[in-house]
Amino acid sequence: MKELKLMKGNEAIAEAAIRAGADAYFGYPITPQSEILEYLMLERPYERTGMIVLQAESEVAAINMVYGGAGCGRKVITSSSSPGISLKQEGLSYMAGAELPCLVVNVVRGGPGLGTIQPSQSDYFQAVKGGGHGDYRLIVLAPQSVQEMADFVGLGFDLAFKYRNPAMILTDGALGQMMEKVWLDEQKPRLKDFPSWATTGKSADRERNIITSLDLDPLKQEKHNFNIQAKYKKMKEDEVRFEMIECDDAEYIFVAYGTSARICQKSVQLARERGIKAGLLRPITLFPFPEKPLKELGRQVKGMLAVEMSTGQMVEDVMLAVNGRVGVEHFGRMGGVIPSPDEIVVALENMIKKISKS
Amino acid sequence: MTEEIIIAGFGGQGVLSMGKILAYSGIMQEQEVSWMPSYGPEMRGGTANVTVILSDERISSPIINKFDTAIILNQQSMDKFENSVKPGGMLIYDGNGISRHPERKDINIYRVDAAEEAAKMESARTFNMIVLGGYLKIKPLVKLENVIKGLAESLPERHHSLIPVNEKAILRGMDIIRPVKEL
Image (cartoon, rainbow over the protein chains, first blue to last red):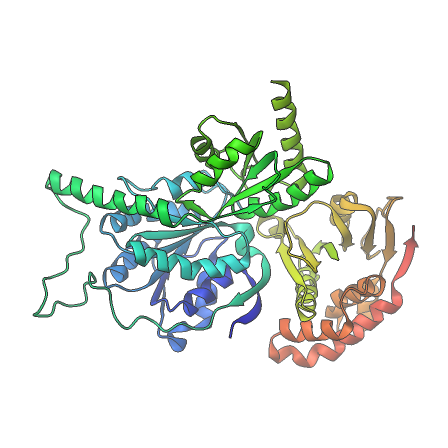
């Protein structure tokens, strides 16, 4: 039986982690995601399921604890907000190199630097293009509601283990702080059997498992890179997730994820009230990115407006997907400012004016 | 039916918890709800506000800039949100601490002097429930029994003894709210 609650997005992530059968959470507090750690400490999952919750001495320590736990084949989660996620990048690069699964939650705040504690989407590049050094990607999920904040915890773990690669939930302070109805899954048991690659103590009947991101032989390292890239190719084939709203007859579409996608749904309504055939494509996976549906919509619509709370990051991936077939523009607010549904419609109207002139 | 509400006032007036009780009440009658608080620097400056949406349909944007109803509990919020009420919408305010009364001609305006009334009740902390009662008198979107259920859900069990006081405050609010300007 699913359970109905009214929860903040941050709390929903924490509760969903317990119910997904996570083995451990390691983290360090930072606004606007501290409720994740606070909720877990209050909820005492070590008494419910045996899940460990630990406040590390820093973000760097926390991600290395995640590395260790993942190396043992455990389901491990960490969370932070933008400046803290930057600190975790070295660990994430090592884990991608060592092919280890984990779930990282980034409740984004405005940047650069310490920036602000208000919501933003300015960590898109960092999340989808790798973030740390080396050729690697994270699986990136972008929830738009408290329900999806909860649902994507289980999904994130599943994908991370399926591909032996870190997965990230990329969200922001608005979704972290707001409360909505959420149906919570039943408690899943924690894993008893560990994956074959896990370092759980070598028995006499098998070779030893080695977890490392280091190989000094260039040819071996190149082969390793090919193997990792093959996984990303497979993700692009099998794991793309997106939602289309009012796109069937759309002449113009918004492309937006997370909080911006929620606001754009209102903008679609407002635009249609004003006689503009508007729609919305909402990427749910940011990596792998929904290139194919955008390419197809590129043949149908007259223009696309990427709406992001940033100076324009995802817009580049939209442009790559449509490859010049249709005009793509960007509208965004920054530094913790959330755009209103109305100003997005005005931006759309301005784009339409520009297109009909040319 | 969709009702988009902003409740705005000082931190400590119970603005966020009033929104929470309203959201819980909506859930009790199987509505979609969202509760979007101001957080961070806004709150630290002493003002607090929350946007609550109750709807029979899936809620699109939880973040909005035009409201069906604004419940305004201090002057800063009056300055900030009076113009955010949709034409034909509703503004409810507490006269206490208000130096400039609302001036809009195209909205319904009601006054509920909850601070004054709360001081007469056994607990001044029922202030926000008096305001909520006033609102529900004008817009009975959620049933009183569902508000009581919502209260029980949102209050920790050790505070359940306070539910009758809160119910009384809601009823009091229903009595004292009065129109300033009706369209």
